[in-house]
Amino acid sequence: MAKSSLVLLLLSILYIAGTATSASTTSSSASATNFIKASCTATTYPALCVQSLSLYATSINQSPRQLIQTALAVSLDKAQSTKTFVYKLTKFKGVKPREKAAIKDCFEEIDDTVDRLVKSVKELKNMGSSKGSDFQWHISNVQTWISAGLTDENTCVDGFAGKALNGRIKNSIKARFVHVERVTSNALALINKFGSKY
Image 1 (tube, rainbow, N blue to C red):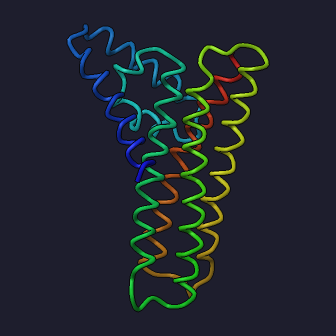
Image 2 (cartoon, helix red, strand yellow; image 1 turned 45 degrees about the horizontal axis):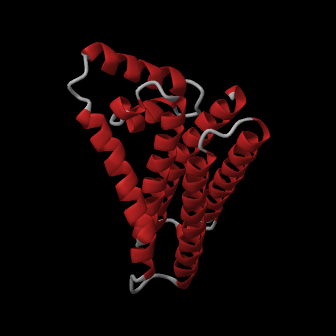
């Protein structure tokens, strides 16, 4: 519950910060949106990147650090939502034993992903204005945890391999995990770009 509150608080602050400055000129807003679009070209899913970050354009402004923090917050929010969804599936009755086992595995995987993303958010905050080897150490930690989270997401989807597990549950879980994987992949790409510049 605390993780969920952290995500909601972080996204609320980003949104409020963005709307509080909404009186700024259209030019500034257009510049922020253009910054997001240009930054998202470094990602595997640029359209999703732009779509998921544009809501926060005014709070991101043209800050690379704010961009990566927001991308990571969006990823954490999607992972937390997926965790809640999978948890609810673990309580379903009448599910085949193999499906139940795959759902349980997915819950463990998404739980690990959420933990790693929470660590990454905290690490970026702890980074502050670090420079040199301290900066690289913080960025390396974030990159490692996000990469591990991506592996967790793929492991869940792999657990539903085979025709015996085809059906609505598999399709629902797969759709959510693919979305989390994509926003997380985008966040990692933006962090990698940020890390290589500073």
